Length: 196
Image 1 (tube, one colour):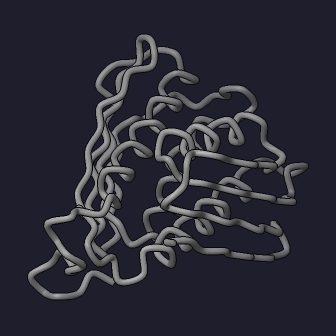
Image 2 (image 1 turned 90 degrees about the horizontal axis):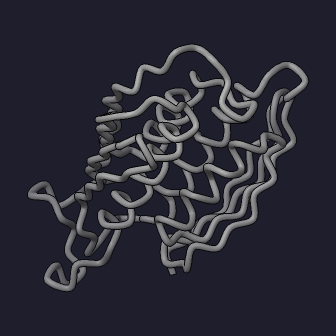
């Protein structure tokens, strides 16, 4: 089973996270940020990943440290659960609507971290969640996961719908990328013979 547990404690956050890539989409999230819990639940469900997150953060300051540090932990768990990434499809893409919003995500589980993101959202709040935190989470996650992510907003007005479509598109793209490709027969999908 491709799974990992991560604990991370700083002066700003105390996080315990469990991730299974071969799950059924079950999640238990308690981050102290309701909207973010909702996004992580969506990520889990649409990626078919089992996810448990418990975080005590300095949300009395704001939600930035909590969201960024969970991105770090989720990325680290993702890389750890993949191991050598033998037999995976490696690439994945998804275009996902959420009412008027339409987001596209393309990923390469390459061992190289890169984030290309164009949903430049107006500074504001969606469900108590600063819109700027979408990019902070994605950046922290991709850096620690060692993956390439291109995220594009094709349509959208409502920031809640935009952020939700982005999380769903990421989850669906990752689901395809980590799926075991039976034609790979346990091979590492790279001409270098190594991803991580």
